[in-house]
Image (cartoon, rainbow, N blue to C red; front, side, top):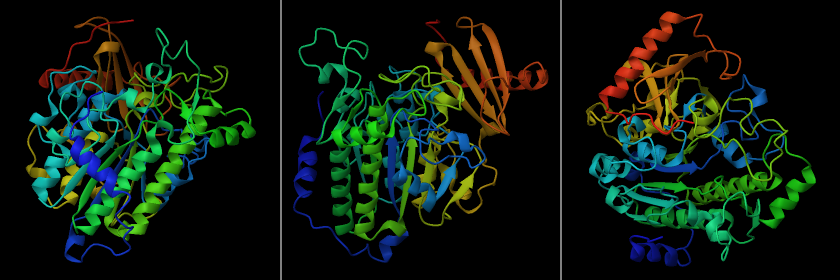
Length: 469
């Protein structure tokens, strides 16, 4: 795949080995501008951690997986129990996060007429708030993103990267006539750099070193290729999980080992930040681009589903497809705190803009997200979101959904204009949808939410549903 800005990329790689690790922090004047590390994992479900995202649901944590370093971000900051990816698949989520838009507006599928660099993006917003910000993107950019990271105002990046750059059947099985996840091995060994996890961390630390040395505030997004298929891990990690026995859910030992490698990478990144002496002035944000997969090669289909206890999986608008780990630590955030207020990935642009000194109320009207900065001080404060609703739209699968307060309505389309079924859920006590459908009990609520959902989709000229199964 063609890469962009190769010259600046090579400079970063070379400097990794010549710039000494700096122990002195940024100057006092520069501390007014916080740094940001945005860690975006791929296909990692809400319950795919060794600590629960919600203390009320102990069953949501895994007794088999080990993610101590990811957990440590929540221990140092705030866990958002009701944190959502903008979409149940990667590229729409990534466009949405970059531009602060609901995917129904900016493209709900891989191909889209939405051109990110024609709109405000996170780096553009940060540079508007403070021109000193330096911005980098390392790792998976996305499929069919159209715009390059540089055209979206990143100063350095890995370019137009996608799934194959992290390892897919076509790249891991050279010479195979038609490699797929079904006709190739369920997992692979790479003892040096599985899923590029460790090299991404090295590049990220190198970029941070440069900015600290130059007394420049920075934003760096590291988009890991894990946990996306194919499954690639180190032999050491695989042996560790084989000794642990059978997984507690329908993922494989190799998939669990790949997550362990990812957690180690996150740990190296956090250690690198500590060594630079700027942790106290840096926000660390971690979320996944969508929920976990329904099936994983090598997993035991007779075990609990990979996203247990949530219903559904990647590609669907059930909670298993869109509710994800969402954790933030940083200045002014109380350690080991929790918020149950629903937030979503497209809230990051206005949030970072405000934290960088901008006025989120003055952002363009096409920005759908809201700043969640107020939650850092008061985890229960109501966010001033348009109609207080989150909207999800997956036209290719015939699903749309709206969450307003604690109620969630799912619409299933019969065709591009007709609805075949509606489902209503109350998520106030728990997010489990299986067996808890309430549309007959609250017909007026169904009517209200359906009107609001359809009205919103029409207002943003959302793509009409198609390709029903």
